[in-house]
Image 1 (cartoon, rainbow, N blue to C red):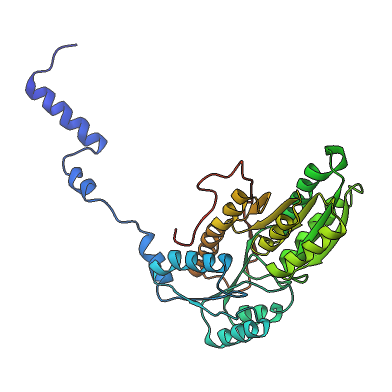
Image 2: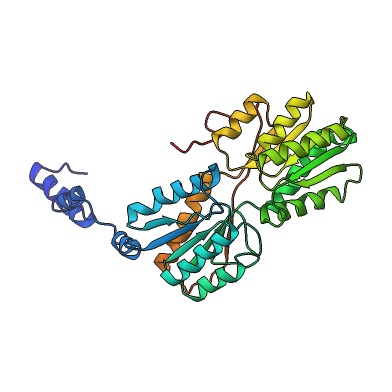
Length: 338
């Protein structure tokens, strides 16, 4: 091939650049960047919207974590987040939801005390055009979205853990106890169903006590102390909430027993501290910060797309992490400051 002189080479390169769209005029536009065409509509759809959170109560790790996470994610978009705290009163919670239906926020996040108390009100809220997202304890009425643990599945996994630790075929005596929360709460009723599913196929496992502590650590401690007196050879306990089961673990420690205690919670630092101290043998975390993110994303999706309230029925089950003293890491649990 003949060699090109300087003029011919320059012309050839210019022609190639033109053909591929690499002209010098393109450089300034690329250097300046281009706007995201979807960004402005998102902010316009969310700006000025109002979200209300009705927990069973504030002042403990789950609800404080959800509230902080929801605010951190939604408020930068111009969404107002308001908390209506019934402080463990179901009647006050019902009154709060009733007032909100009249006030018409764009969405309500509800933490149900049980499966029935708020069911009609949640439907009434959706009928009024308000989106409803339930968190971690489901009502018998399904709303636009539920974000929380699959308690039936979690109960099955926890029961299998007790078989692994206490089953006769694994060297145990099969004697276990159960410390529930409020019997009518989804976290108790559904979790108990999962445990029943497993133990029904394992008659060698003997549930010597199954009592409700109503989410109260003092009640859990008293129940456990009595059970240990009646069954000093108890092998394992499944508790339904790590905060309540601080009392369960305290009773085991004071009795000087070696009992395998598996419980569950939102993965707060107190859970990892309890594992480190030996209060719990194992904790199942359903990750409150992750749930707060999922709640917020559901609300943002609903507000952007604008479906009719009640038209969607979405369930987002939270991934479960089983933590022991040996498997937890510095990042396994969260703090509110984070």
